[in-house]
Length: 333
Image (tube, rainbow, N blue to C red; front, top):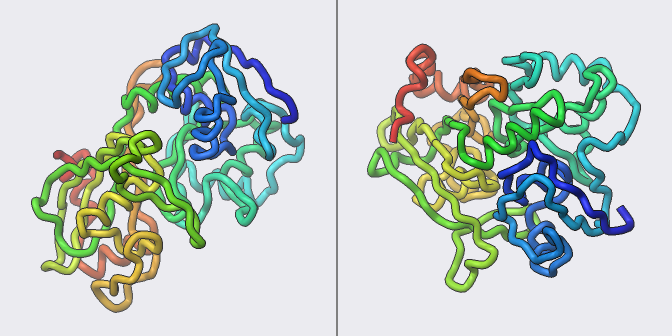
């Protein structure tokens, strides 16, 4: 995009946060870059300066500045090339819920949700190639880290993506993650409330607890946790309920309280594994998601564990089926 644009807020986007709006329409724009554009006044709302958490109203105009890389709107035609047969088969194999408006995938660990210079294969790219088949390009509603597995919601068209975006922005979505962590947290149920600041390093972006004077760029983040089961004091199976949805939030919060997630190569990666034979992969799984359907009723979907976590559960005698029919007990905090 070579020139600034004035983009009108759709009536269906009334009440959506500005940063959520940018995620929906310009998914390649990173949060850090958006904050820079906001701080320098390049993004404006009805001509005035604005913050990332501002709530939008239908009919307002957002000044979208030119970007230094390709960030075309999510509904812009990028390519008429269809997804390969292999990618279509992969996408279909991941679907665990589908209706006329949305679908939910069980994303495998190791598959990126969005791309980058070193990530040519990702879910967003597969969705781009499905535009001709679906009649409209399916859209991501939220994100998961590359190494996190589990439930991922996809909207089949823009109007549904807008509706779901508002739900996620207003915290009407209940998300439950399962993880194996080093040691056993005490108390066994608790809350971690620590604002996070993103930092860049040679191994990629990380987040850390905000320090005094960093409130301007810090993001408030809250996580509830509960121990479901344990293996002596070596490790614990925990349920995690994020109140907010910050990048690496669960991983950083568990590391902050001294119980990093097993297999996490970004946060306290030098800890020895609790037992020989455990696979060196992130043991974090987006187990369950529930939210009001835009057309009425409730969507409530759980995703089976990935293979490496299933094998670790078997190694320590954890029985995931205990909670399969009981609403995933153990997540109450």
